[in-house]
Image (cartoon, rainbow over all chains, first blue to last red; front, side):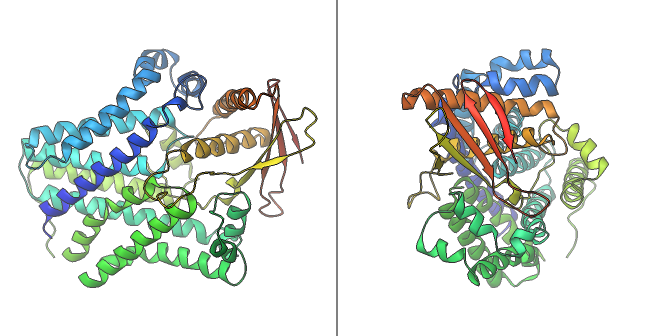
Amino acid sequence: MDATTALQWTTWLGALSTIQVALGWLSQAKLFREPGLLAWSVLRLRAAKRRRPRLTEAVTPLVGYHGVLVQLALRVILAGFTMWPSLPAAASALACTALFCLTLLWKWRQDPFAVNGNDQMHMLLWGSLALVHLGTWWFPDEKVSHLCLWFLTAMVLLSYATGGLAKVVDANWRGGKVFGQLHEVGVLRDLAATRGLCQAPWCHVAAWTVIAFELVAPLVLFLPPNVVVAVLCGLLLFHVVNAWLLAIQDFTLAWLTFFPAVYYTANSF
Amino acid sequence: MALPFSQAPWTLVCTALWSGWFLVSLAAQLFPRHRMIRALRRRDPFGLIPGFRFFSETESIIRIQVSHDPEGRHWQTLPAYNSFSWWTPLWNSASRRDHLVTAYVVGLIELAEKVPVTEHHERALLWTPYAALSAFCREQAARQGATQVRFRLQRAPVNAANPSFTVVFCSPSLSVRETR
């Protein structure tokens, strides 16, 4: 896989992930309407305290009920636009820059209660792709694509390693209690298998498997290509199972977006 | 393997940007409580510095119970995410509301505990979950045909330093009280 192909796959998967997330929020538009949980009249309390009140007033049309619906629709349209084959560099650059700005505006509005991991990954993705396409437009240089894929790989592997490190210092994860607690409060899907996960010795096995999987993920860079594919398939399965058991569906595609970059970078080594 | 560096100015700009972004992100994951990282996060309203500590903050695991009688005698535990199905990995938009309620409840519990949500969020921030949940309670009460809904929010016991406690959140009186 060359850098152009890897970037193309990254763009397609990222666009699909962005569309999935934006459509998901659009289907829950009532949350943004008064007196929904994400109504601007509530969130602006935080914004007015943290930032200049005049600035908050100025951006209200952009982030109020209608503004946020327009933002989400724009994200769907622009993400679909980036999937178009053989798009001119200028159009790609403008679309990716707009998606990056929209992601930042979304994060600013929703922070900290409704910002998810997928928003962070979209920010990294569209920001990096904007730099690549701006480069292609203004200063054509193939090396920027390589650097972009390296950066995306570094960030996604950092996300796994951080998750593993944070869990390994947590007594509940080390002691295998976390699945029991998640099941007790209804976060974990109620199945015979998950009830089994809450009891020894399976709770320890499952907790340490997750920790080990996340901690060793960065080592994928030093593995042969065939093994890299197997590890990436394992990581995909890990995300699908998480999404199925924990109702965190947006994470799967958002992380899958970075896998072409990981495959490319691992092969480069 | 040769490093793909060149003297092209755009390559240098990108190299500097991506290197800086990665190094700051790495430092923020390794030393989240360092004063320089906290200062950087305070000056980062768009969240350019990511946080990757997913599902490791087990103190955020809470139980939400609801009672429709004014005395709060019969409590019923609300399922955290009430929509599981085979297509959940791809599409489960209804879970967004449940995730939000959980996030606000965690904020409210932290208000009762009088500690900041995270290092970089001011105390004033915590009025946001309070206001959001009050609207949510009113909506729930109206839907159930009740005049008052009580929410009991209970954090799962974690360890001796972090005992379990309960916050009772009544609508429409909007009072928060805690019982340890």
